[in-house]
Every structure is written in structure tokens, then in C-alpha cells.
Image (cartoon, rainbow, N blue to C red):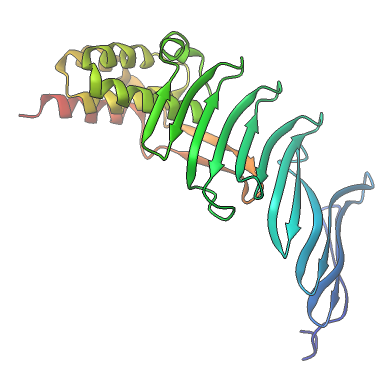
Length: 265
């Protein structure tokens, strides 16, 4: 509203060297929207609206100009989205028609494939498959309950894993081992207490505690001096851009909790 009347005209905002403009008609975005870097004359974002709804394909640079997000709208709803880096390498894809989410490593290798139950249920998956940066398949999860693992490869290469998806693979694999071969699970998790990534060390401590095996206590002792709190910058997706996540406390605290679980009773 402008002076009590639905606004028609151009809304402009210019700050921090960036110009943004959007055309309005009768109070609704209806026309071109764009965002321009005034210094370099580079288009940072562009899209079109009709009667307040986004139409066609929109794009925006995010992650401080390192990633380009492209979204295609159908009836005002995102039905296709991609993220690529400055070299044009595809990193992420959401396809609401084919019902999948895909990610790639910067080297072009497949990273994950998630098959959706419905286009608007981004976190309900019929099937999820994961790979590492060499192209090796790691795990497939079906209906959130059935797991298939590349067990030998995971056992031999977990020390090289890096991504949060690979944390999930290791967690699922270790839980599976705990259910079938506790001794093997403790041996595997003991090695992960020395992983270079704090997220894996934290999970190793937590899962060793879950094992309730006193034989695991010596493998936890050195973690009592590990006061790092795991923190990660999240990978971008089209819906929320970038963000971060962290564990609620330090690895040392988690190791202490694990040892307490093993010595109870």
C-alpha cells in the first residue's frame, strides 16, 4: 500500500553498492525483478512476476558470489532448481517432476541421489544413495529403514570421509554393526576416535557409549582432552541458501557421557 492505495510503480533499494528494483502493479509484484552490483555492473539476480507470483526461471548468486542458484516456477511453485559454482560445475539439483534431489562433488562425481515421495516433501525419501568423491558407492537406504552398504570399502576408507552425508553413512554402518557384531563395531569405532574431522570423533564417542562395552573405555580416554565442539557450514540448497550446524557440546563431554554409560550398574 502507498498512501492507502495498492502501489503501482517501481520499488527501488540501493545499499552496499547493490541496486535492487522490482515492478509492482496494484500492490503485487508484476514484472521484472533484478539485483545489480553497481561497481562491476554485474547482474546478481533476476526474475519475473505476474500478479504477485514468480514465473519462469529466476536466478541469484549466493554464498558470496561462489554459487549460482537457478529456480524454475510452475504456478508459483518451484518445480526445478539447480546450483552451480563459478566454473559452471553442477553441485545440486531438485526436480519436482522426476521427484529427485541430486548433489555432485566439485570434481563432477555423483555425491547423493534422493528419490522423493512427492514434489513438496523435501525430506521424505523413498530411497537415498551416497557416493564418495572417487565415485565409490557407499550406501543405499530404502524407506528410511532398509540399508545396503559397501562394507569393505567403508571399513577401509572411513578415515578419508569428510561430508555430513558421509557422517550419516558411518553412523548407519556403525549402528548396523552394533546390531550384528559388537566386537567388530567397537574396533571400527575405536579407529574413528582418531578421525581428523571432529564430527566423526563425536559420533564415535556417542556410539561407543551406546555399545555399553567396557572394552571400549581405553579408546575413549584420549577424547577426554578433546574439547572441540563440532561445527559445520551447511551445503547450499535452493530453499534456504547456506547455514550452519553444530553439536550441543564438546567431544570430551560426549566421551565422558559414553564412559559413564559403560560403568553404570
